[in-house]
Length: 344
Length: 287
Picture 1 (cartoon, rainbow over the protein chains, first blue to last red):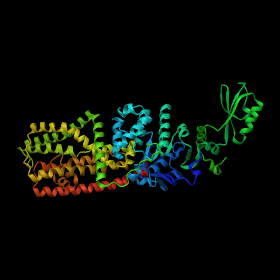
Picture 2 (spheres, chains in turn green, red; picture 1 turned 30 degrees about the vertical axis):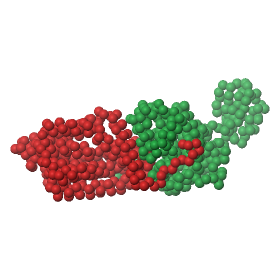
Picture 3 (cartoon, chains in turn cyan, purple; picture 1 turned 120 degrees about the horizontal axis):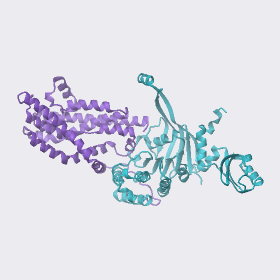
Picture 4 (cartoon, each protein chain N blue to C red; picture 1 turned 90 degrees about the vertical axis):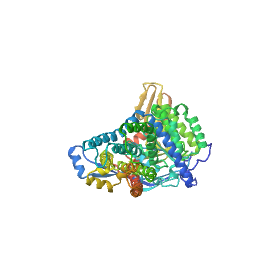
């Protein structure tokens, strides 16, 4: 379970971000007519650091999840790596290319999938858009047929390909989007919220497909998602970005330990009326089950005390659910490392 | 996606013939896609075509009336030479017109440009193919319409000198290239300002007068005529029309074609420069 970074002698990285920084000029004015008129003469422009000195490397075949609240800089980072945005400072390198140069030989090896935007033609069947894709990416016909058959087998596209895209459900459309994005067998995939708005079944389908694609082809995948399930299912390694800065880069299971000071103890008391408040903060009370939050270091001792003092059917010590970890970090609105600068 | 197989890399350098074949393949696929999309909106295509036909017919009716009121001719044109001029103009205008300036506004606003920028092929090729698809689809309606109008208005062509006939095809191609490049370049203004309708309106007004659509250029009042002479718009419509209706002397035709070629080359050069700046701008403000 060692991450790539634990093995320094590993293969050369596929993706390199070094001090990657991106400033946006945001023009701003107050609301109202007077302010609108003033802004005609003099615009006040503020520089916003969307991404601020982010450094990381991703090795071949890795799947890395980007976590962060809206506006944290995840998508901006992804866009710089895909070649859509120029970095203001720092360096991006993907497959040995500077992405922003958008050389055809670079573009032929990557793909960017965004849950919000479609690259399929709305009015015609996906199969027709796929055919266009084949020509644009110069996929030889025999290889194209093989790839399409593979994608069909994995995503069950058959019945969808002949229908106009506008008649597909969102889940069906996303399957076609993902297939279209992979027809040229990209070596690096940038996925920005690929499961946005999908129901659970469709999400799971896309997820298992991506895992399968990664396993079969050894492609490198960088992914942002609001659904922790996506990240948990696909990514051993996560990068947390907040206010444009890199907050955490490491194994998913280490995230909670590094960033949250508490653990969760789930108790099933034999007596439903048992009062467990003396042992910790009760965060949830379901029939037959009480969830406590306790300081990380004290967790084993508290659990032992509960076992000794309360009649219980079961006690388990858990890391907080990853959603809670993320929510805690982001709602606190601060980086734990930067705690030195915070007032109590 | 072979089991454990190496992922195919894009070819590094493709020989020129190979590159041309790939581009041809892209054009064919884009053309087919566009035809399929446009077939979904047959009524819209016809309404559009109606606009293309109606404009010249209205001008023709107006000028015929003016000619009749001033004793049969205006500036050497009678109703039959006007008919020749405007029926030809209708066809030339159909060949060269684009709607790209309206397309771009939506592309930038809705972000649908992003996937186009990340494709390993310049997005203009898709637009050219899309344009040609519309032209090909509407030809089947346009030609019979033109024939019917010819029967109704009895145009008088002055007989096409062989040289002019020979120059007509390259002149049409150059007119298409020039107009497409100019309008694609202007459409890129959408990268700087999201609302481009004011610019579009201004351009269309200028084009209407200076490309010979409101009136044959020799009939324009002097300051406008001088302007039309020094600007490229006449090479988008009026020049091929004048070749077709057999007006210019051979020397003038060759000279005109050379000027047209120079304008077209300049427009393509401008397009390349502005495109680079536009993409940099896109990358600067965010996609």
